[in-house]
Length: 183
Image (cartoon, rainbow, N blue to C red):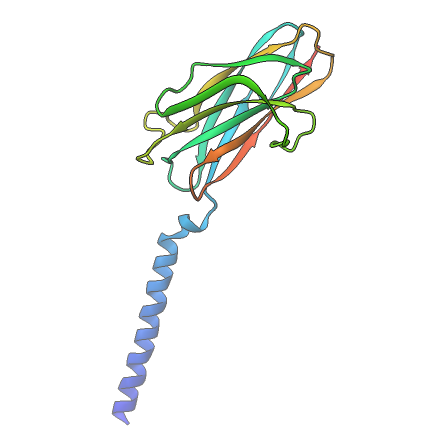
């Protein structure tokens, strides 16, 4: 009888230890269960602009959940060529920059899901050590987008959208557009 009681007690203790071990493992790995996201925000999110004017829009980067240092990010910046004449980047975060293509490309595949945008430019940063960005506190500014409004732009609203041409492995991508009211 004593032997059966000892075996039952040992089994209960083993089950309790297993439950505690699994609970601790889940608690310490909770970060891996949350969605890891690279996030781009355009600032200001909304602006009144005038025909012929050049405006500045900040491109801000952050990582939501997960490890803050990644392998980099590639961005497509979409716009409507009926309103916007040109886009260039200034004050670019230089570490890891691997490419920028300011010649607008036609968005034949509607990559941003917005039928009103028809062109995009590209910029990208990368790190083979998966430690990018090293010198940027987050949220941090990747660049300033210099947006030249067409002199004959119609009085209406247009958007600047951002999509990912490449993002870090196991990370999602989110972005917030900027709205421009042209007058």
